[in-house]
Image 1 (cartoon, one colour):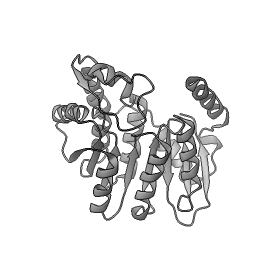
Image 2 (cartoon, rainbow, N blue to C red):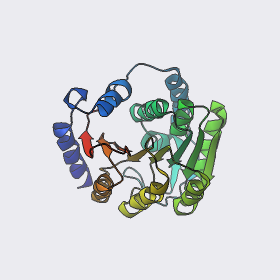
Image 3 (cartoon, helix red, strand yellow):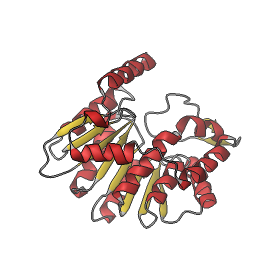
Length: 261
């Protein structure tokens, strides 16, 4: 039933969504044209995808501590790293889009909720090597594999924090004067998603970008996304189906865009 609902949402989005040629906002048009639809290969793509290939062939078993809504694919407590890499890592298309968004914004700080095995964290760190990346993971054994991945990549300035987001996210937010780039890819429940959004609000600014993953994952996530879009501090949203982009641009007319990717 869930898959049928998801397929229906996807088809409806494809029917309604536009390309850059159907967008009249100069800000959004530039973002689509120069960032979202930038399909030129980058050196970092090859580097990170090589790490993904290694993870896909890793036969080790780890025990999953799932503090969120679980997996649509496999809810077994023990999983092979290769299986987790196949089903839980952001696919290259989306991970590379996140890289381009961060590279365009050049944030001084990046928060990622949901480290998984670390490939997306590496993409984000490479987008602006001088930025401080805080990546939060609820599962200790998954976090341990991510640390191995970071070591193989030789990345710097990624701080991996393990624990329940309810405990770890407030500490990270409190230590920062402002929030530049936040990617919420964890828990996937309506109440938790809205809570994380509200915690971020006091420190967002005109150049902040909040990204929410799996906004059509469930009816609850769809409801959370609609509430986020309606919030008075939010001015521009871009719905890419798989992820939703949230901007805070004072003086702009509130608007939301559905864009094909």
